[in-house]
Amino acid sequence: MNLLENVTVTAKANIYFDGKCVSHTLLCADGSRKSVGVIFPSSLTFTTAAPETMEIVGGRCRVRLLGSTEWRDFAAGERFDVAANAAFDIETSETVDYICHFG
Image (cartoon, rainbow, N blue to C red; front, side, top):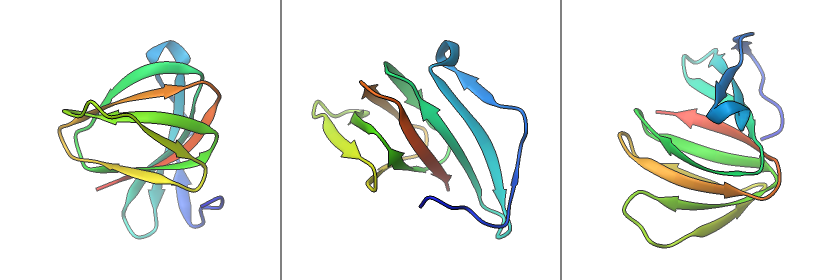
């Protein structure tokens, strides 16, 4: 998905991990919430409150879900799901563009 229509964007950026991840929250006409952002080259651990689908729009990364020892590779056009109240490790060697779909 490269174009999001009928959304309201929060102007203030969400900045995580000392600037290694920067996103903006999107409020969609259907009431859903998403974030769109970038992850700069790094190794990070994210935690979730709600279920999330991480859609990779650009770049490549590898991901390990909470409780797994297996790393999986993802590239533009691919996505992965993370349960609510969980975590995942992500490693990027290049900038990754993403859309996070909540709920």
